[in-house]
Length: 158
Image 1 (tube, rainbow, N blue to C red):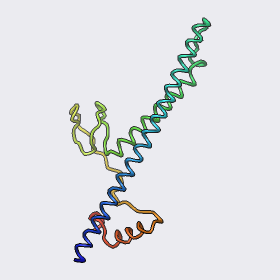
Image 2: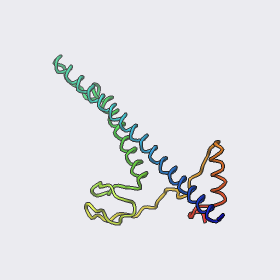
Image 3: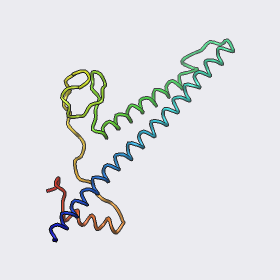
Image 4: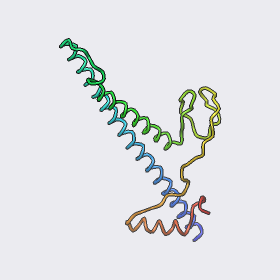
């Protein structure tokens, strides 16, 4: 009977750890997407400022000087767009995806060929740390779970 309880406890702990890890990934992805949305809104505002500047110059029959009139907004757009691209790549990594260098199709790391264009993929080392989740908490119930995790390591730790 005790052996069955140990197995149930181990399974529950492993399930808790897996769910916690997945929830953490989802939360991180949501934060990254929120930051991307913020950047897109800022970019839209900058586009509107550029359009307003161009239209005002048109009404006043003034020449538009790209360097002095639009450089700051254009530079800010470039910076935000680059940041969004970096955030997008982080999201791909969270999902264990990468882009095909040939067609930019999103594929899994382990694919040897792109399913979209057939381009052979360079195999990259997976830099993700494959250690099990660690609980850091002051909650008494989670401390008990930690004790069980230490007593009954997951299959990865055995």
